[in-house]
Image (tube, rainbow, N blue to C red; front, side):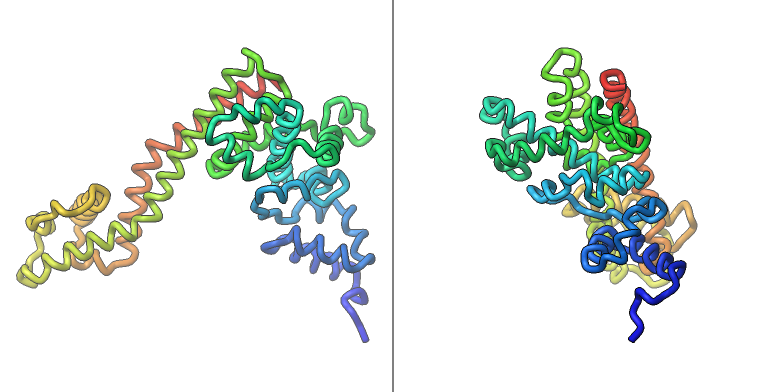
Amino acid sequence: MATIKDLPRELLYHIIIMLVQSVGGAEEFARIIAVCRDFVLYVEDKSILRVIKFDIKMEPVKFYLFQNVKGLLVKCSEAGNEAAQHVLGKVIMLSSTHLFLSERQQVRSSLVSRDRSMIKRWIPKTNVPAQNNKVRSFMTYFSPMQVYTSEFSTTRFVHYQLVKLFLLNGSHHDFIEMDVFLKYCIMYFMGVTRENSCLIASVKLLYMRSRCVRSLEMTIESFNDYFRGVREYLEVIMTNLDSSFQDPSSAQSGNSSEMGVETRNVLDHYMWKCGSDGVNWRVGLNDIDFVEAVREDISNRLDVLTYPNFNIRRAETLGLFERLFG
């Protein structure tokens, strides 16, 4: 009976390419090379390694599973896979935080509340010799001395290069998730010095800007809830107005004092949008495209205030990082 291994190699190659680019591509590829030796040869194919999809959500403690210098994550990273490099940057930050705390146990006992809770969740133990040796061995692979003396130095990264890529490409969600570990990563690489204090302060400000962006997203996500309140309010008004009534400004003549501030703002913008676009305020309520346009307008107004500040802070943090690490 014919099996997938009997397919022409060119066709099998295209099947694997489609597999690794699908959701969960990295996990699926790891699974097939583990169960069939005939697929192992594709582990060295850089054209495949570069496009494997790493949509992996980092989980507490489980990041230790990625500390394998011969594993798929490192291979893909060295092949130029940007998604793999991003995940590996997180692993580097978590690993360096582990080592920093294992070498400075007294620091752990004096952590501020948020740092303590984050570290306890992700790195519960830093006093297990075997674990420390494993983490240290993993980090050594990315040390400048090891990389620059390696015959494969053109494809290998120094640890701080991966952190720099994280700063360059990370989302605000990434900075919220990793800011504690980014801070201790810097301390591990550079020590606790006056020179890096500005960088650490900038990381904190970047975290705060990231929180602002997340708040913006939450506002956008909750638009439907706010608009539901607008719809209910206007539907009450409709029942008390003549069906031929067209003046949208008069729709707010009722009492809206019980509305929340956000709902009232959405109502104001909705009525303004109806007036500026010449849309009957009753008709607009049931026009999906018009309601979406209102949401986008509100989103864009908030974006103008929030995202530029976030990107400016990211650029400043990256500049300070480059001054210290190059």
